[in-house]
Image (cartoon, rainbow, N blue to C red; front, side):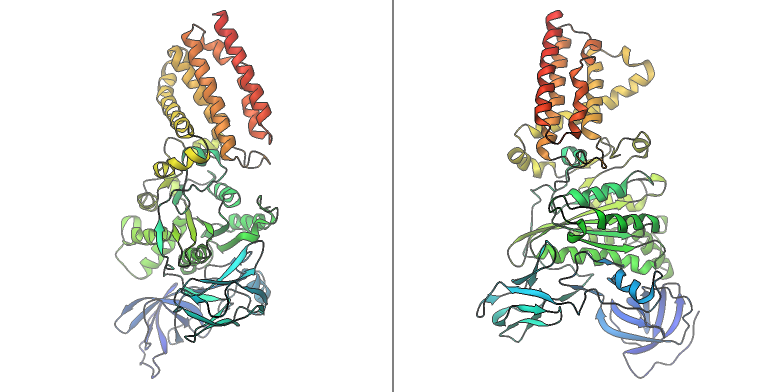
Amino acid sequence: MEVKTEKPKSDATGVLKRIAGPVVTAVGIDAHMYDVVKVGNEELMGEVIKIQGENIIIQVYEDTSGIRPGEPVINTGLSLAVELGPGLLTSIYDGIQRPLSVLVDKMGDFIQRGVSAPGLDHAKKWEFKPLVKEGASVGPGSIIGEVQETNIVHRIMVPPNVKGGVVKSIRAGSYTVDEVVCTLDNGAQISLMQKWPVRVPRPVNEKMNPTVPLITGQRILDGLFPIAKGGTAAIPGPFGSGKTVTQQQLAKWSDAEIVVYIGCGERGNEMTEVLTEFPELEDPKSGKPLMERTVLIANTSNMPVAAREASVYTGITIAEYFRDMGYDVSLMADSTSRWAEAMREISSRLEEMPGEEGYPAYLAARLSEFYERAGRVKTLAGSMGSVSVIGAVSPPGGDFSEPVTQNTLRIVKVFWALDAKLSQRRHFPAINWLNSYSLYLDSLHDWYDKEVSPEWNAIRSWAMEILQKEAELQEIVQLVGSDALPEAEQITIEVARMIREIFLQQNAYDAVDTFCDMKKQYDMMKAIRQYSDLAYAAQSAGVTPQQIISVKSKNDLPQIKFIKDYKPALDKIQAEMDAEFNALRSAA
């Protein structure tokens, strides 16, 4: 669809020349890369993504059906930016930070085109409390005051792109996000809100080594494959293997103070579950709704693909903003495969040379740019903050060799491989312990020694060895049966079963088992290790594998998962276990 037009006199206004789905071409407009433009008579929001001579290529964040060549295109001269300030928490946005609640009020349940809405409520007043006095020196990123937003204190900062100086005036009071609360001697005026372009990482003083784990309360993650605060992880898995439930567990239980959840291109019914369940979830830390420390970005698969491409940048920018306040932020992207598919569609509209499976050649670079924005940092204000990025990947047919999964694995440090076969066996979380890995084990070693137990790292290594040994033995068992195994290896099979069923399996819907702290994880693993040591000692003393496996006390171990005050029950089981094995050895 093309039209020949003459260049208009104004550099800020041009006309549409060509339309190819979400990608349109304009002429007669002076623009820079990533400028936000308004397209057509309905002023649909778009962004400049390519410049070829006088042709300005634009991706439109809304449905382009019905617009025609010759309609006007207006350049705002601004980059795609998000509004950052009080009011972010509890909000549910679309991919370009339009609040869904505001859109519903404006046009009902179905989003129409050309409707814009600011990311923050510009009419609501917030109680501002200054933390610096007149005459104090402040710099970019300095915290000048705070607003009690929910149960989270929202720290008001000097924007990173504002030059520092001496505070000329600052006053407490009730303000909207637009009103000036602080003036510097260099003329800079600071309000409760700042804007930041989504494609530009927010600056920090220093990136720190990842030496503190993000505790999730999920035993297979904390125990075997931990992620560090400021780390990156991928959860690839086929349909129905539990990606979304795992991410919801991480959002609810991880010890991050702020959660940013991006539903990127997921099916409408899945996103509906998230949007209805999250407001109902109780924050275990405060007892208040989990939404009070959560920002949700909903961009379903039937929404425009260009907005899907932008949604991950919107989410990571909001996460960086809270990180700059000194908070630990956990960002869930569900799923990066849909994001990559949006890039693929836009790339094909641009008629770019396709890479593997039709994805653009820059797929790996875009994934790297996104995950590189994670990290544990020293902020401009001198405090510590972190953004941990956990991206779900939805490989077609569960094929981990496809480009998005493979490029993601080259970047992230933690791989939690979901397995459809485990989910079919009702083993949840369905994370395959043989395919998964964490590259943070060495850097977190000292933390576990100090905060959990000096024995923890050795016990973890022992459990992984047993599980790997079991995988090798299972091949023999399938050929000749378990009775043909040597006696010691029959015990290995039983110990591995206990690790799988008692430690690795976890019930997300049980009030107690949904979260397991590190102390309980250590005690559970130590009890299994105790059985293992006693069993091998008894076998050496002549006790048969059948007698060892028939020890009754170990059958009570699985119940420990569901007991809140578990220590007395566990001590009793361990004492009974000692007594039973002593009796077996005496009889032998």
